[in-house]
Image (cartoon, rainbow, N blue to C red; front, side, top):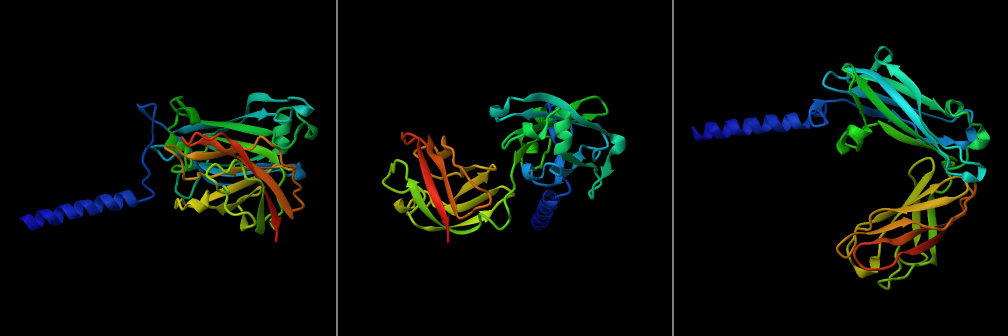
Length: 319
């Protein structure tokens, strides 16, 4: 009898593990604590950017499916609103608020490979300029189009990023209610990649007597991480033997300038030391990858160490 009970318990556990491992059986997301809602799940997309060098063909395309307790059959309308954020007041502030770009009814939906209701959307820069009565001259690097999507169910309830959980909007469920397209310039695939010698222009305040990114003159390898981004790995404060894992120095080119953002340092004095964006501007030429000068603000959050923020500026020279 005892052996039979053990066998039964093992069998139940195997069934539970098998059920949890089934990727097709995604959990139902509860909205507003009371109702079963729906969300937009991203299937595929192109880079979220609008290439200023190709205004007539610049676009963003994506495929989504609608997830609810009836595989999207409860969704009646998918709406896409957009606003324009003018980040270059030098040519006038043309910022404009939320405007309906398009409304897609259920009769226009297709079906995804998983059998959910779905849709494919392509948004062109020409369409966006027309929507806001803008010309090409009104658009400069780092101007942004901010999209706000939502779905309306057959019962009239509306769901978007505002009333969905963090899990839906995170990577776990690939929620795709809201997104931002940035006006920028695409880097050639063969540039700003490979080995570079890193030297310091400013090592910061050397708070612990160590160079923050490791020794001056070391070789780092730049890798492409997107159409406008590159990064390299380094050990933060390596000489102290803290055993911290590698972090990344990420760089983004916005046409004629480059900015850096740095990953989690993994170190702190009760908190976590972080880097912020440098207050300085670093000019760049996207056709010349021989030398890159860029900086980031160390101790933006001092992680409880009581140390003032200080710029760290480096030069990368291609080998």
